Image 1 (tube, rainbow, N blue to C red):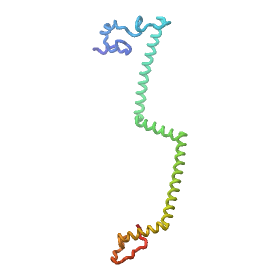
Image 2 (image 1 turned 180 degrees about the vertical axis):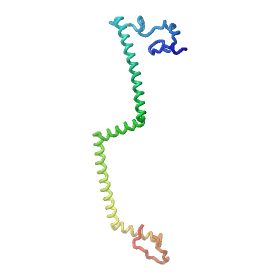
Image 3 (image 1 turned 90 degrees about the vertical axis):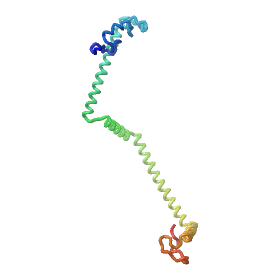
Image 4 (image 1 turned 120 degrees about the horizontal axis):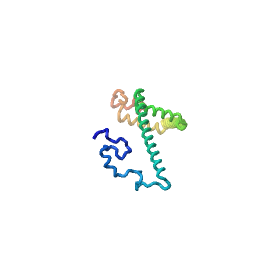
Length: 187
């Protein structure tokens, strides 16, 4: 089929068909055609008004197609300019994310949240420090108590009986030596 003989009007009922086949479609009804039983004229609309509206519709559709072509050409031109400037889609995404993050950081909600979390962190830190101090004091008090001293002495004696006098790297003493090298050996 010769490409020059093809109908290029996309709105044509003969689109993509060669001219030689166009008369075979002459019996096929076209939408909006006068006398089309499937699409009668609305009440109160004369034949002249309908024809005028069809003409206007055709012009509007042509304008829409022209605008699409212009938009497409502008988009291609913008893409070419971005390519020449070295702006890739990834760079644009990075810039958009960076700008969005800056917008978030300057928002009042972010500032208030950051301030609240900072205060909460300071209070938590102070509370943990206080708890740590209290626990240390209680453990110190417990270590100085008579019960703990008695327990510590018993554990030291038990260690001496199990390990003997050579605990903590001391020289091996005689088996008859019964005095420990330290009064309160560490655990």
